[in-house]
Every structure is written in structure tokens, then in C-alpha cells.
Image (cartoon, rainbow over all chains, first blue to last red; front, side):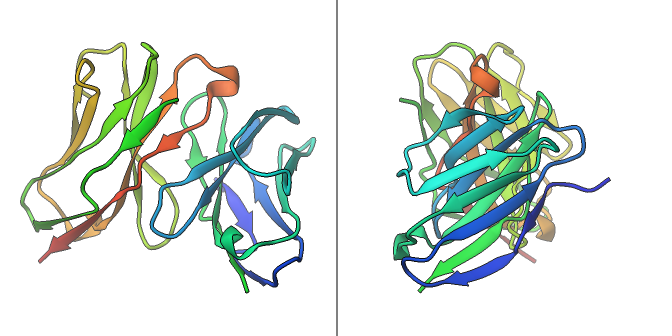
Length: 110
Length: 117
């Protein structure tokens, strides 16, 4: 049974560019959450989606947006990239209990 | 606002020995979950153990156990018979029990555990 899959695994972007990160939850999981993990820190909550609706948003600027599709997969979009957006972006899915995390997308902004 | 604090940036343990990782948290809620996650170099967050705040009994999962002190808002993780594969970053996390769509996780800054052969 496939776990939470994220793509791409690594990404290098230039300041000012836009990036889209993708997440496929475990089959049957309807909730997807996104976290940002800066080097040396714990993950910080960005968004949570459930049944295609936004159910929670962390303290991130409007440059960050997300959506969830009918198949429960999700995209995280970041516009006007800053150097400080360099981080590991983690996706987690759940059915109603514990969260299962993917291995993340390492984003480097240069 | 809820916060989670891990005061030990790094810890080291000899293989087969026991180590305890500390975590304190702050919340005004009475019903919540606490977690310990392990993050190896593969980057994936792996759930180690979960504690429901309404349960007085400390959770145990094989070699991993917690000491949950609700009044003191303390939640430590004990790893017994440490193995080389236990080397990783360990994160303490908190989540409200009754929140819209389960609620988000709040993480501490982590403790890097090294295991010496």
C-alpha cells in the first residue's frame, strides 16, 4: 500500500519565481495538511484541507496558497519566492486519526 | 497559543542503554493529544508514540514509553535498549483533540539523538 507521495523530491528555484509542490495522500485519506520545515527547526503548519475545503491556515503570507482535488491529492503554490522560503515542505494525510507524512520536497531558492 | 518546547538540542546514548528526551508544552485546553515523531535522514516523519491527555496511563510502544505529567505539562520519551537505528531527530508535537478537521500539529524544535556503538 503506497504511503503519502510528494513530488518533486528536490527543487531549485530563483527568487521571484513561482513553485508548485504536489502531494498524493494515502488511498482513502480525505484530509491533507502542509508543513514547512526550515533547517534546524520543527515543522510549521501552513494549510489543512478536508474534502476539498480549506479547514485551517497557519501564519503564512498570501504568497502561499493550496488546493485539494476531487481525488484528494493536493498542490501547494508559492508565488514570488524569497530566499527564506528555502525549506523542506512536508505533506501529511489522515482519515480521522493520526497523520502520515510523506518524505517531503526540498526547495532551495537562490 | 499553544507552544511546545524541547530543551535538549542534542543527546547521545550508548547502544543498549536507556535515554530520556524531554518536552514541555503550554496550553489552556484540557483535551488534546501529544506525540513523539522520529525524523531520520530520509526526512519522513514517523510516528513513534501517541498519548491522549484524558488517559492517566502512560503510553508504551515496545522499547518506547512516555512519562506524561499533565499538571506539570511535561511529556518525556524514554527509549530503552537503544539501537543504532534509533539515531534521528525526535520531535515532540501537540494537537487539540476537538478542533475543526482534527486540528494541526504544533511541533517543538527537535532533539538530535546519536547512538554510539
